[in-house]
Length: 105
Image (cartoon, helix red, strand yellow):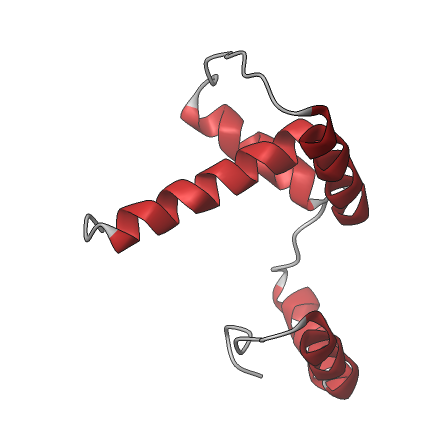
């Protein structure tokens, strides 16, 4: 199995890849376990640990449309995240995309 996942155009394409590669994934898991390289926790916990290593983030207030907050809560819940964490991730991704488009990266 490659170190990185292949790019997927759709969620169903990704789901199909994961279904077809279950044995490869299980083998990689077993290999990581044998080497003592398994991580523990969730994406949210890993994000919190990363944030704590870089220092506290400043607190800001931003007004959002109620509908946008509702949508963010829904998507965040599907990913097992708090909606604030999810919004911060979206903003980070958008800024990286803008930076790349502007040729600053």
